[in-house]
Length: 166
Image 1 (cartoon, rainbow, N blue to C red):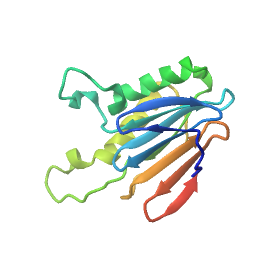
Image 2: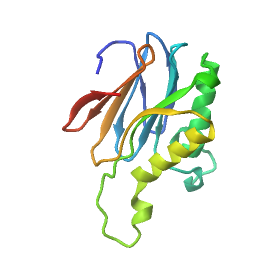
Image 3: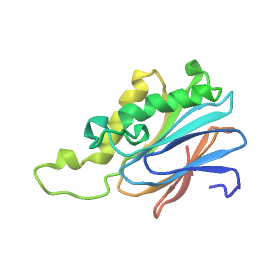
Image 4: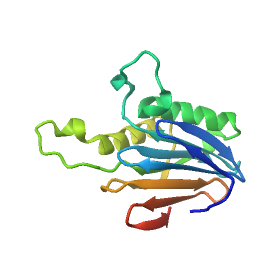
């Protein structure tokens, strides 16, 4: 990962957009999914740190759109286009969606948050016709990701596994 001053950090259930020369990073991806939507030619990228698959799980009136896959992807695309990205040129990379805990109860589907997040993000990207060009999902380890909109590389630091790029 690059330790440059030009890194914009995205928190949990948050999203942001960067343009070259800035990088964008989020950490704490366990069952959460980090999804990057980018236009490489324009040097613009957006990152959302998605916590849950569906906004139907919201418990309050004020909805944090970045928190849910079904609302975050649409909002992220909008931000990237506003920043100069071309909708027809957008691509996506994603990481996270780990199964952080082992469950032995009958209600295991509700507890499969990681896999359900991955499925929900993929469905939304497909809905908006954005191809996923690379992914690093599943497993049972946390991740930190950093995207460079100039090179299109997503650096993934996985707990106890070092750094890889996709």
